[in-house]
Image (cartoon, rainbow, N blue to C red):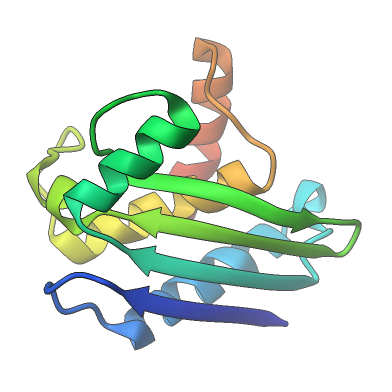
Length: 141
């Protein structure tokens, strides 16, 4: 089961259906890999916020006084259940290049993959960790 709540607190239109479809596709692909077999029940909130709110959240949780494109928070992680919140900032996402020029929707999907991997326990504190995370993300894109 995959449950996704989408909340848009910005003026930029966001397709709830596209977000739901993307998350369901990402989770389905991850479930096919043994290391993600725990993803039987997934409940996520995806929240779109403005730059000011994202800056406050980033300062509070990461001690960086600037807005960022995405934050993710695990609310619950058990053997068969993952619950979390993904916060996205359209203003930052739109400005950021991500190495290649891509549409806003594709940027959001890339960040959803990134955030879901964080919720599953991946991190990128080292170059090695970054490469592992990016390798998985590339297979999901």
